[in-house]
Length: 178
Image 1 (cartoon, rainbow, N blue to C red):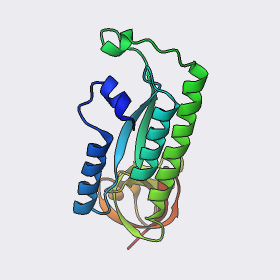
Image 2: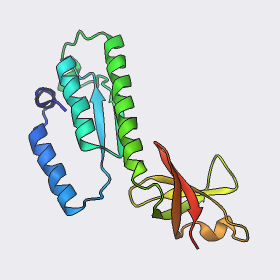
Image 3: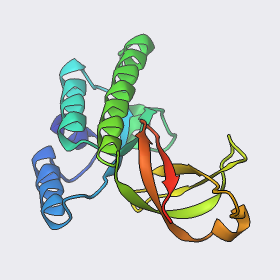
Image 4: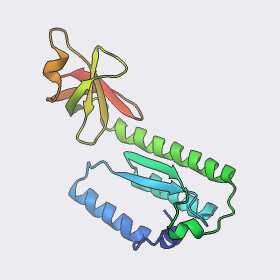
């Protein structure tokens, strides 16, 4: 989320350019789900850089984000960069980022509450043998109970419609629509 850090990472784009692309994508596909990877603690990142990242996360409203704490990799330019940020500060920033990502994912999933969603059924739920799980077109995990008289095997690999009754941060749940 920081142009200064993007330049240090040898990225050849700016946040303004990135946001222009996001706007163009959303104009073309208004209901699109966006995900990203975010690194916290890149050498030289200060509080202002991190705040820019948090603002970007809130502005974009990602459905998912894969978050990482920077780790040096031998042979990369960043491996030789000096950074005096205490690990406790990096961890605290990471925790704030994770909370912001979770808030965004929850808000995005709320858009599916009380709606019908198409689901590619992958198999039985790992947590409930009487339920199935699958993925929506937005890569959301969706759980639904196996209806009476229907075999789990007959649902696997099928695209079904599920009425969403419950939208959580990392999953949706509901009932199979006949």
